[in-house]
View 1: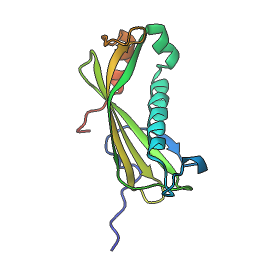
View 2: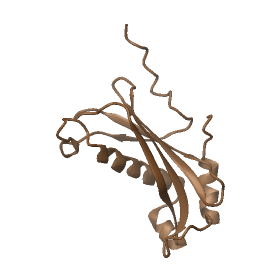
View 3: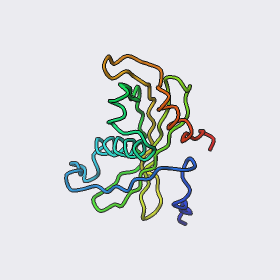
Length: 154
């Protein structure tokens, strides 16, 4: 008996930002599946795409001399993916303390069966780009990121 598949609309959290990805020949490692480093690259691409869709780009980060930097990253590799797999990567911001910290989560699902193949999370801290020191989020970050944040309970 096969387990029931999750609906493609049934994500871990509500209101995901979605990015379609697929392994290319250069992404496949010696074990004939997607190399783990590729998942990290996709998460970075999804994070930037989400930020830009919300209205904050790398140019804004430079102008404000602030960035949300990864303090800690955790990834759970649940299933392998292979060449030809169509995938959808969801990402969310979770509100933090409203001053220095936020969290970003990821869920990667295979389109053909809805299986979750990866979950990840980043602990983010706002830094001053010029010094690398932790600094309070500028009002522009709070105005864009905090309303977009979801809660871990949904």
